[in-house]
Length: 73
Ligand code: SF4
Ligand code: SF4
Image: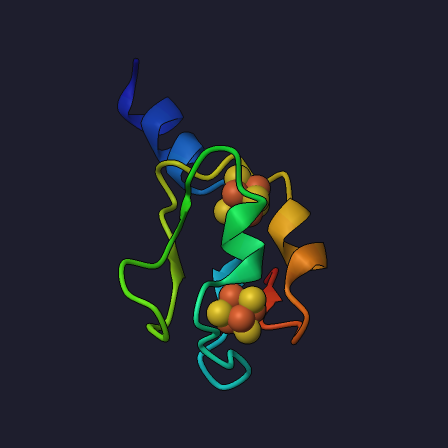
């Protein structure tokens, strides 16, 4: 794999968790829907984050967050 294709892989359309909107739910419901386990929350009530290397940009989690805290830029 070339350096440029590696860069493309890491720059795909991954959403991010907006800390100003996230309610740090006890068990992030959006996380439950990510089959790739790319939405990470180690502890209850912790701000989750999206592992960009794992995420494939399906955007299912964007729809599942009840507070619209997962955003695409
Ligand atoms: S469901 Fe949404 S608001 Fe709740 S922890 Fe997950 S990202 Fe944050
Ligand atoms: S966009 Fe898809 S793969 Fe990425 S964190 Fe959300 S549900 Fe998981």
